[in-house]
Length: 178
Image (cartoon, rainbow, N blue to C red; front, side, top):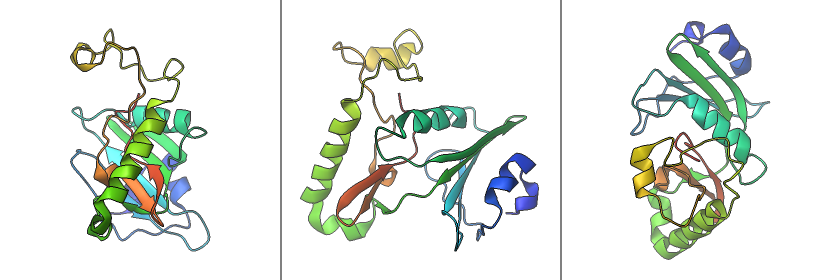
C-alpha cells in the first residue's frame, strides 16, 4: 500500500505519519490502515468503494455529531473521489473489547457495554443528522421499537468498543449510527 496512490486531499493529512500497510479490515468491505507518528496523533485511514456498506460520509457525519457527546475519533479528513471514499480519523486509546486480555473479567466488560449503551441511548436523537427512521429505511423501521427514536451505534460489537485501563475509552466504526 502506497501513499502515492491516495488523493492529495488525503495525503496532506497523513504527512509526517508512517504506515506498515497492514489492512485491519473487519467484516465490512472497507480497508483500514493505521498511521503512526512520533510527534502527532496516530491516525486511521479507512477506504471504501463498497455499495453494501454505509457510505463513509455517514460515519464522518456521526462522529462529528457525537464528538462533544461521547468519546469518538476526531474526523481529520473526509474525501470522495469517483466512487471511492476516504476517511481519516484520530486513534483512540485502548484495545477493542474482543481482545482476549479482557476476557478474564467478563462481568466487567459487560458492565462497560451496558454503561456505553445507556449513554448512547440517552442521547437526544431528534437533532441527529442521520435519519434512520422508518420513512427513510423501511427495513430498519420495522425492527424499531414503538417508543420513538433512540440513538444507536448501529454496529455495536466487541471490536467497535475500546477499553483502556478497565474503563470505556470510546466507540469506533459508526457508519450505521443514528
